[in-house]
Length: 563
Image (cartoon, rainbow, N blue to C red; front, side, top):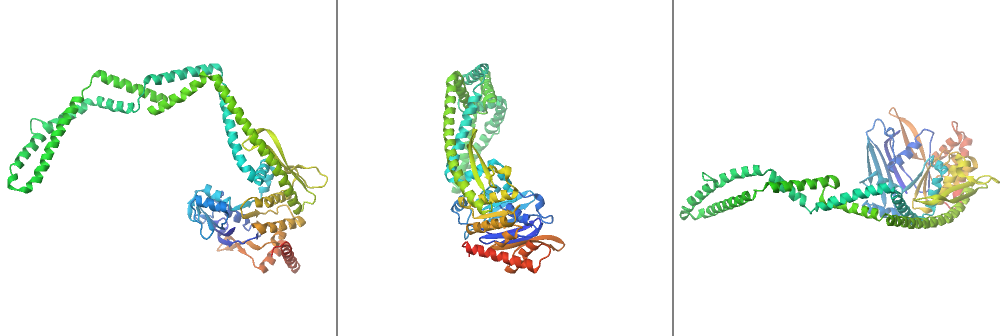
């Protein structure tokens, strides 16, 4: 349930807060007072798109926060997976927008917009002013039916999607394999050449690295020899050398050891230095002897390295990649050599995948037909309660020739709103007000199909009035028994059913226009209902009508079991 809303620096809202309650929460206000901004702020906090112009010009950022009480097991499990802590069963969704940057948080933990949307979808359902227009699209009808029958359909549709993908993969491979014979011959010839070229190279693991090291040594051999000659002269030359100097130092120090025992450690260090220097000179001599190589050895190393680099340029950046390329092409060559067997294998795999997909499509179709009959029956009942006097409603589920990832069903809602009229597609005969009521009926039926506790209706009353408006208000009051309902309305009939009534108003503050929202007292509720009923002039008669409307609403709720 939504407990609290906090908005700052969004359009006409400088800063406002509101606490919501259980049951039916009604929001009213003059046209242009900022009701759409309020819905926009909720949409923003839930991860929806927010136009830049929605941020106040005199502010650096906009902020929207929603506080929910959480007890849905599915949502709690998801939060645990995300390591989002729950404090006293409450979850705070916040989103701050500044410039092109958006920061989303769940109980203080920064998350991506995608995660925020995923969590939001488990918390709240917003029915916008124009959402009922989606009922004009048949694909929406399929979505609604599948949502109603999700317990049976969801696992099946997952399998169906995988089967459809597999079937499409085999079909594409089968189509690609149908190239002309000349093209296959050319490809086979090329593959044989490439495979032979790699095989003849007889590549060894790590060979390229060793060759590059040897080649680098050979190319720079002259420079290395010149440097080592200088080092040799300095360390062990006939003239004054390091070896001669350390030897003389050892003799001098040894000659005075008998005079002071403390010289012994120094003598040991010097002897070690002399020994290490002699070892270094011997190892360097060995290296210099091994540095010699023949011209033929250099040429063979260079040719081998050029061959490997040539293969790398064609088939991969490393010997492992070249071998992987060879294996892949060998498989393709084997297929071309045994082309007919390959085609038969593909055809068999495609036919088996098609049969599996068709069986799943058939199973989904049968479930949809059953669920469509149930849903249509519930819809007829709900529509009757929404002042459709003699409504007929059916859901047609027909098979199509082209299956998709969702099966081969085409789903369409059919309706007849007048006695004697044949049923026709919903989009061809329903008015705006009728579409609103159909959507409300759908929301009512679907309310028990999910764990979402909060539903928002933004002007569900579009296109209705009189007795129909009364029926819609009664329906919203009934939904409010099991769900928290937040409804923005212009109709007094709906407003009178409120368990909590809020007013959205616009006022001038410090030379600027600002929107605020506040909860109304009982006396203020009467005045607000009178304003909706009476317009510019509110008389005592209008106030009496407002009080009577509120009294009748309370009577309805009491008679139907809401105290």
